Length: 411
Length: 82
Ligand SMILES: Cc1ncc(COP(=O)(O)O)c(C=O)c1O
Image (tube, rainbow over all chains, first blue to last red; front, top):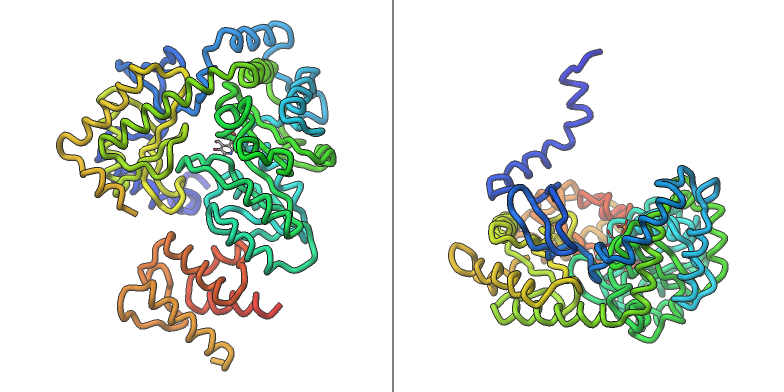
């Protein structure tokens, strides 16, 4: 059979609605999806087409992607170990550097167990899907990141959701569970879209009271919160009670990769069974070396975190003074809700015209079907950079744009 | 409809009416999202409310498979039965 219409419709037909939605958005201006960064000029500047833009949506919280030490470590690793491992951690892909990084993570988090995976996405898939098996109960915060939901799909456990950031709702749901089976509760430290922080200490208490273990994804919070950047659990004084912490090297660590650490040495057992750990090649030498060099900086250079938070407060205060209403209190992620997708796309385009790149976030990538302009702050931003972002946002208020108060009430 | 079924139907209808556009007639075949103009956010709240009333938690797959009023009733029955 050649390319018959039936054949094409049977496979591509399901994307028709999506294609129409993208066409509608195209009318509002240039499309934000799959945007091309033609050239990275620094941690905070890129050339897109013939325009230089200031980047205010990168997750490069500590600005380490162009750090000399981190870059040198990555280059040296390529010279010494080559460009790739071409094998999984269980076969030929565990190099001394992977094991060494695991040792450094154990020291940093003061735990007996650490597993390095190829991405943060896979770290969550690997740990959650293996820890919660058949007959177990997996309880997810309703606003969980896609990879946590995907981990649940890969797991054989029964999965239920509880209300976002509500230990009370979790408490109720744990009470309803049958006695049999293990219980694993999954939350995030700092939520990636709304920039809100979980009450980890309360969650620990509720989970443990019901014999459940607590898993905290600190993808966005390691490097930004807690003493020596060890995350939200540490900042709330419960790092030694949380059962599992996962994270990524793709944000503050200026690399690619992910990890899961635990105060339970038994975490090591999942290396033998976890498919997203077993059936994928390990992180490349340069990625692992960059992550390790970044870890040294995160743990040893508190001025990075200080610079980040100075800029966070400057941006947050400037936005609220201008009348914008971020969803959450000041954090390295600042989310401004817009009344609908069209307005968000149009404003995103106006910001691009003003030379400011932020993230456009629309359903289904956002919780509660909100359309957002999402900003993330970097320690590498200068005071003048943040002024430039603020000028871009103020220009949205000048003409044609809805008043921020109205925008914030949108659902 | 059996008595137990009818009791669930009545209760579910009462809850649905607080989420739906005014005065839409509700039958077991009613499509919750399409016919009652309930979007995904409201659907989430609705499911949470029903969980509260029946003191249950729907497994994720169960919750996302709910489309008609009948399917909602059946999901409640399945979980309250065990
Ligand atoms: C909360 C959360 N967990 C995990 C990940 C996955 O990290 P990675 O980019 O390393 O796959 C992300 C980022 O995309 C995230 O936001």
